Length: 244
Ligand code: PEP
Image (cartoon, rainbow, N blue to C red; front, side, top):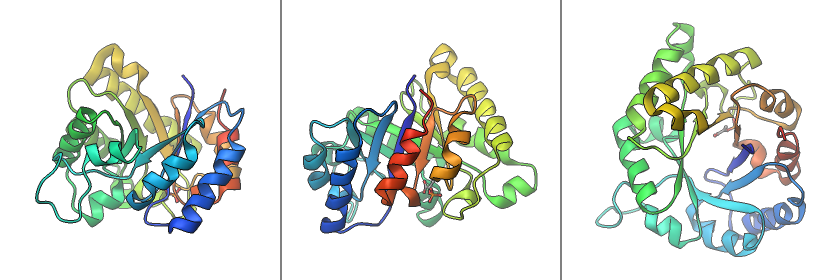
């Protein structure tokens, strides 16, 4: 299966710079051997969708509410993301789990809402530094997988150790390989043969200089990229490092 390189722009980008970034990506994406996804802020979905229309780059949101509509001031629903041109959505990112107190149960509800709206979910899991230091990293990720993924899950997992996000300190190749093998086992246990086909991305300080080594590891189905996805040259360099 082709690797997926996904860019999470987080809360960055006004109309001028977001559309300029999308234009450079569009011009540079020909001939890539991977799938390429960008997840801009909700305010930029429609203008970026217009720029990327007809290109190989697909579009995603960064979160969605679990309800399709209603009295939820400030929230964005899965059908709204779809309507704005998204086909994917990131769910359960550690910044949502930490800053918005999102639980596995809520993430699971959001996965169901996303799937019902025709969006492919990327569900993020990963341990904190304290959980790793106390030897509870696999236990933590195991619980997150069991709690966040509904029956019949169809989407992607992103393993993102919290301590590696935005720190410049990516997990070691050995730790990535160990955790991805564990996640694969859990997915097989939970979903049988379907669990063998779920892509598992690594996220956490992926940059052009470490991308090739990470993307070459077994069970790494791509990367979720934060900071480096705001620099089109860096993001495209990561995409070119994908395993073919
Ligand atoms: C992320 O926020 O999903 C992420 C991986 O960020 P960064 O690449 O900046 O560590």
